[in-house]
Every structure is written in structure tokens, then in C-alpha cells.
Amino acid sequence: QLQLQESGPGLVKPSETLSLTCSVSGGSIRRTTDYWGWIRQPPGKGLDWIGSIHYSGRIYDNPSLRSRVTMSVDTSKNVYSLKLTSVTAADTAVYYCVLLSREGRADSWGQGTLVTVSS
Amino acid sequence: EIVLTQSPGTLSFSPGERATLSCRASESVSANYVAWYQQRPGQAPRLLIYNGFIRATGIPDRFSASGSGTDFTLTINRLESEDFAVYHCQQYGSTPLTFGGGTKVDIK
Image (tube, rainbow over all chains, first blue to last red; front, side):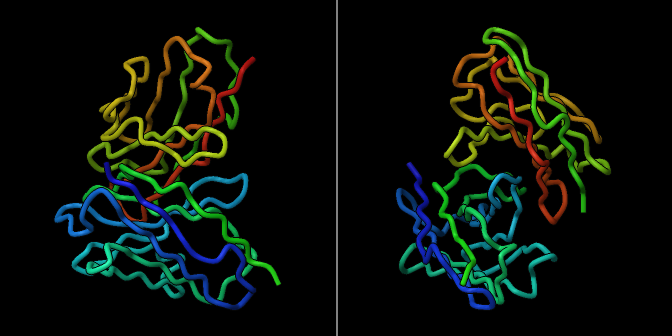
């Protein structure tokens, strides 16, 4: 069964870069029709889609974050990554890595990791 | 972007009752590409319904959904204790993918 696990620092200082990795187990990251994505949830709030990446490198991202987001896939390690630059307190959230269908529904979710932006 | 509104924010029911949750889109959702997710406290969301009405694998048949265009509904029949949670709707008919603010179903 496919499993996703987020990893990365739980605390990031304002103006610095948030970096997260999602490890995929129980299956290959080279799924031809699916995408790998990131969704975040600020404390007590709803869900926000950050972006999605295909193992080939094709990316769909949220225009609201586009200027600050970089996503990549490492097929040799079966992982994919997120970088969010110039973070502020508004970026404090639980970050989930997800498997999305080609259409965009989130079929599988990691357990999530809380990232707090604070000095 | 398509804005999804879920109201009210909280609904209260007794176990065994039927819950009907609403999700309204600011514009028509292409192909009725709406999904519903359940999120229990401290857990990640899980997919319940996709393409507007199709139950995901392993989801009990007391969960059903319907709708088209801009109005979508999730119905939970015979509420069980494990069903008291937050429910999110999502549209994936166009990018950016967007979610509603969620509806909490709690115990009366």
C-alpha cells in the first residue's frame, strides 16, 4: 500500500526558506497518470493547495504562491520536495504531501508535518 | 479561481441521525469534479467521494453525495460516533485547485 511521509524542519525563521521532502514507499514515484502534490492547513483553518508535480517534471502550481515555490522530483530516491522562500508567520501550517489523480483529487495523504515560522 | 463555500461552519447531530452538508461554488465546476474529504481530529484528511458522487474505496455506503454545477451535497445517513469530524469539499475542475472552509459535524 502506498505511503507518503513528510520530513523537514519544524521551525523556520521569518524570511528564510522552508524545505520539505516527501518519501514515497509501497510504490514507484514514476506513476504515469498521477501527480505528487503539497497541500497545507494553517492551524484551525481550511486546506490550501500549493502545487503538483509529475515525475516527468511537469508542474501545476497555485498562482498565489508561484513566485516563492519550487518543486522537484528525485526518481532515484523515490522522493519529491518543496521549497518555499521568504516565509512569514502566515506560512505556519501543517504541510501534507499527497498523491493526486490526473484530474486533481487527492487520493492519498501523508500524516502531515507542522512547520512553524518564528524567530 | 473558484471559491467554495461550506456553510454553516458547524452542524450538531445525535448519533443515528442524518447529516446533510452543503458546498456551493462561485462558478460552475467542470465535469462536476468535486471531492469530499473527512478529517478526524489530529489526522490527515481522507478521500470519501470523488467526481461528485462516487465513493472512494472502503467508504461505507451510509456516505452519499450529489450535485452539479455550483451546488453539491454530502449526506451521511445513520451517523456513527466515528463520523463526527470535519468535512471538506474540493473542486478540481480547474486550477488552482480549491477547497471549502470545512464543516464540522459534532455531537449534539
